[in-house]
Length: 124
Picture 1: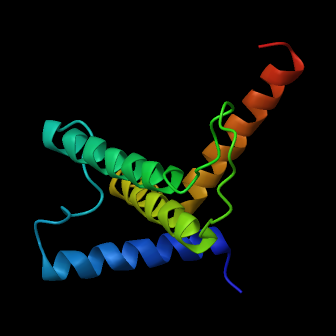
Picture 2: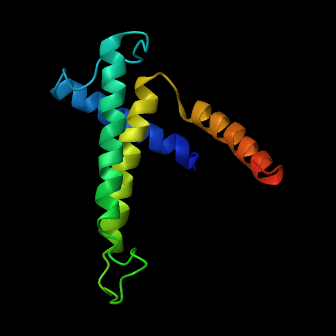
């Protein structure tokens, strides 16, 4: 089985290509030049869409207030996860637009993980 992160990137990139066929203005040619103003605006918009989807996921959490006395038992975990997946899709699009791939993301993730563990260990 193919690496799951690579598979997720492949699925998103395929969707972006299909969307571009139907709606050419949806995405520019990949990768984009991040020095250009319009491409920086596109990246910012893509990131904000991902943040918006995370806020939609957070709206499913009803018992987060520490002062709330009542407990809302209803929780749709499928909808919660679906909103998180929507956010990931926008964040993956952002990474893909910038010309990075799953390996780039993984390497950067591992590097940052080491940094945050060192910070924790050394009293950041």
